Image (cartoon, rainbow, N blue to C red):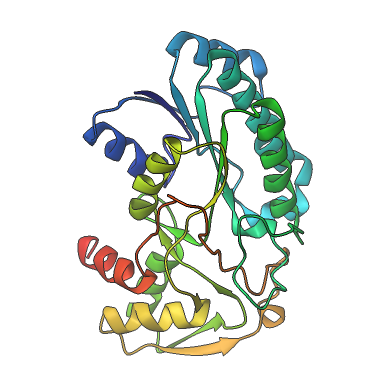
Length: 276
């Protein structure tokens, strides 16, 4: 297929594009050279490339920055996503919109299914949910929403690399222990998005298997890298970040045919060995 990937230079885009090409797709990536907030620029790019599918990875992902700049985040995550969806609909392209576990409030005692009620508690989650709605409204017969969580990868700043560096420098680090989620390697997410691209329109959950707190994740990183650094568990309130975070945002995969990603611990071990 002819596939267009937005956010091509991002952490996810840089793993996704090589995967798609290696599996026979004709792929074009776009990034900052096309301002997705500008409908004319989006229409021109999509019209020129005539893709059969678009995987929309471009997004405002600065969670704390969104809290103080919600209108700017809205322009990217909602206006931009809507522009891409309308252009996809105009050329009949399938669309995959990458969304987030932050569309949930994190108060559920069980894993969130694709049909559970959304209730974001911060600006980032609000703009991503509004983006989901904009995409589905603009391309109701062709939009696939792919919610994922806790991304890390070799092509961008991420928690794993930060902890690996701190573990080599410090005797102890403070890490939040009251947020529970599912770490997801972008290299594992890439084939999942390619599979979702071929599935019927709808909402899909796709994140690393299993669940862990950030503190537990840090301990696993230190153990896998033979670091003697200890983890001092703290609360979200003690960390004092500007944006609220869902306390439990584990995503359940219940859709028939949807990809199931491997356990987060197995993926972490693979990532650390490959990027040592």
